[in-house]
Length: 505
Ligand code: SF4
Image 1 (spheres, rainbow, N blue to C red):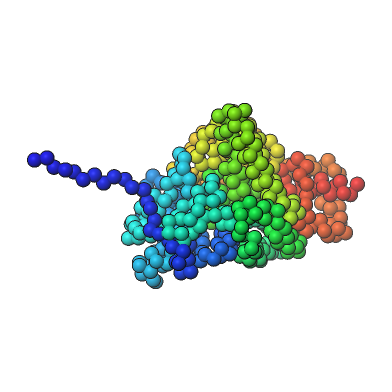
Image 2 (tube, rainbow, N blue to C red):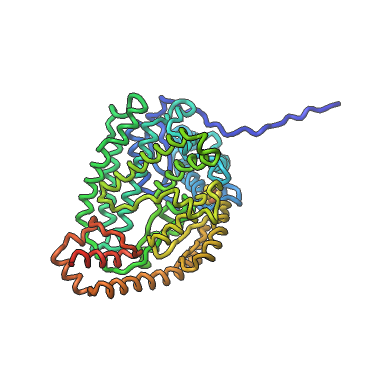
């Protein structure tokens, strides 16, 4: 007799509904960025009437939990972030019980497609949730390339323009403030002052996002968009923040190598155990760090469709390309307004065309996944424009796109043997090995920073004592918000001496 076999076809994860009525009682969990970005994002969500809470910062325990719950070949950021969610839910279950956790929380994360595992994060999350007995826990994905995605299943969360623009504006504000933080802390005269002012600034900006005027967030899409682009609401707030930073005094005569952080998106953005706290560690080792703004990634997302349309036929797609370029220009306009409100201290965004052009001989710009060609482009950009003495590139263990970029970098280094490049593989549990590797390159970066400082002193005929006397007479040059132009030297101290030499003439 013929037997009929039942086939269980694969079905993609579809969350249970999160309804509008549940908004008052259900908390949206999110994470994966720095505490500064997350706090401002929380402000945006609170402003729109959601209960929202960032996950606790990543720890080593999250790596262990992730390893237990998802497949062994997963990349290190996937393991960390999945373990982070799992550990939080486990701790909540211990207090509230399983059913209450399922009722009280949903998780919102970014989604994508393409060759990297980022597009499959939700699969890892569901696997981990299965392991915890939380199969029906609700996860929602936020596509990175659509501002208006409508309501999620059940209507509890609306991914519309007020939310998406709020999130982007919050990220950009946190980015410019992070630049300020990293260029100030290494030179602060009173230890701990930068962190204190930073905490106050983020608390203040949280309120700014929390109190976005509701009347500006309703009406047509164009109106909401125009208000975000043209309003002084955010720039005034940043000017207020700048006043607080005016009070920090710095000593820029401390000679420090500048280290640009590049690498995989999550690893380079993160501040904590997930990347061995490498940015703080570098500062403790006497370096000034150039942090990677998320804004560059968003710029890449905006620029990639232009490249694709040109690839298909620039003449045929002229109108579409013009529209995409206009959006890109508006984005730069907004970012530069934020920079200007902070005295043009935060770094400018690198030109995406230039990154593409620099990387072209080594990495094709249509190869997506991970950071794409940007990893190569950014290293060459920093080197060619003398923005940093060395590049510290954070590579996640078991990341396919990153492995390709590192292969391409070998070719770059063959052509530019002078480029100081420290590729650090991050597994989460091999800290000593990774940091000692970085330290070796940092020693040479320090030597170069001192050499250029001596060169500038010799060139200008100035002495440290003469500069100190000038600082006493002109205390404004020691303000953290006093801008030192870039005169073609990588180090802050060298540019500072050149700047003062010009002023003293
Ligand atoms: S870029 Fe690499 S590390 Fe990052 S999510 Fe994709 S596969 Fe994982």
